[in-house]
Length: 94
View 1 (tube, rainbow, N blue to C red):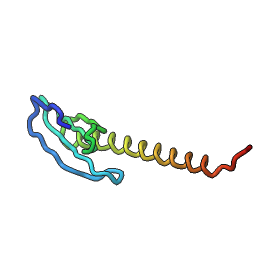
View 2 (view 1 turned 60 degrees about the vertical axis):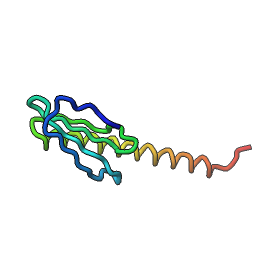
View 3 (view 1 turned 120 degrees about the horizontal axis):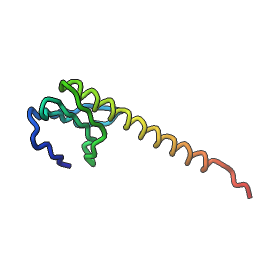
């Protein structure tokens, strides 16, 4: 999914693994501050954003945001699976 970064300078992209998933980190300079975003590649939704005085600061904030969102998503999935398993194991009360 393309994202508009018009007016951006020094665009960089790299791939890292967060919470067991490969994500793309994109950072760039806009004016005097760096912006960064993390997307989950497929389907390409942005899952973390950060801004900072340095590229490193912006990327760290974006990665922290993305890591938290992925951890919460994985926790929700695990809770849902556990809930379904418990309902499936419950004997009928008829």
